[in-house]
Length: 538
Image 1: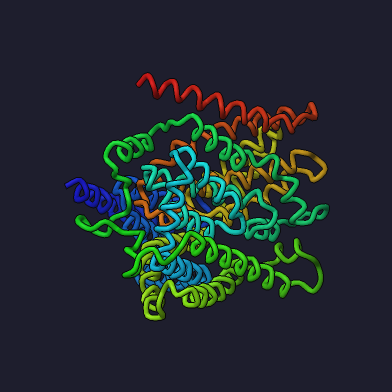
Image 2: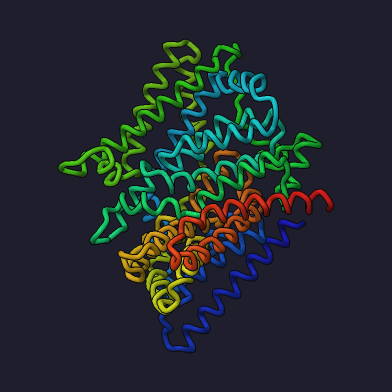
């Protein structure tokens, strides 16, 4: 009944939005939506509907439909063209490399499960990791160690750690949060990552190279760093708050971990039953495929980077690499080597290995569908001129130098939340921030960091973000449950980060901008102590 009413609300809202757009367009004789606030309306409607209906597919499609109606100036044939050509076709073509990467990761995970290695790893972890705190910290550490790429991080950490977290009765919503909170944040402060390469490509500084600017901005990336402080403190204090607490309490009391369901009656099984002779696969048979995957993906990124430059070293190659090419290269080679390894070890047969191909693909279908719809929506948002609107809004705030880092952070959060993309957000804002702050000022680095931190924060919160989608997929958690449970945590860190950027602007005059980060760490720990006392009294 609740789902029916939510769907009815979604339908009513979408119809009303289309009627309003049509009326506005007709009354104005062809109103121009591009470069105005209207450019952000389709993704905002998609986010609102996703939160109302607890379902992402229809919400994203309705947002895509609104974007198509607006970008075609309410033309029927134009709307169809925008949805199919500019939206979905471009999304599939643009994300082809990542879609291949996702499918191959799904196949490798299916192979590991088929071999029985996941079960062996879970048994080892149950003996070695005794508490839920240990499981959470192990998940966090693994997430930090896989800093090459956020997609790779999300799916690898989820598949490796889920047997351990399940054995300690950690809900899949909490696992998804731990994955999401280490994926993008660690990539945004790791100089050797696909994110560092993307940021470097957006920089147009005359004084600094892209990678140098990225490195010098790391100490002021308050959201990413304070997220790590938040996770460690929250884990050690052994409590949760908001909707996450309800999921954790239910998991502890009933054993219901909230694993994503395919239907009302059938629970989606992340862990396969394994081969007929269970126990063939050992703990090492999970570790070696993961190492193979990491090694070949790093090779793929570096090889692609070196191919793009005439001269230079390791850093220059990473700055020039294309993750959409390097990751598929590496993962394809890794898949071949993993299959050969498992056949040589005789822990799977050739037929069992081939059966894992459709299994891996099917496991990734929900993530691929949401990612395609979200990217199509982002494409239409770009066509509507979100960049121009944000640029004009930012230019009007140049007079408040001390408050500009905080303003940049908030704007980046809102743009990233609405569009579901970190890369698109800092691609829009970095040139604007570079023009606002003089390169001789220390606030130049703070401003760049505020842009990057805000992009990560909005991406972390947004239900249409690809990283959020991948985190749900990696943990096999209902996507909307993941969004709703992590929002209070992400917003808490965002508020503290905002205070830090205000402090950085004020401290700059005294030459103690560096003091902002310790202040933020103290505020984060103090906030969590306060929340624990408040939660225990409730």
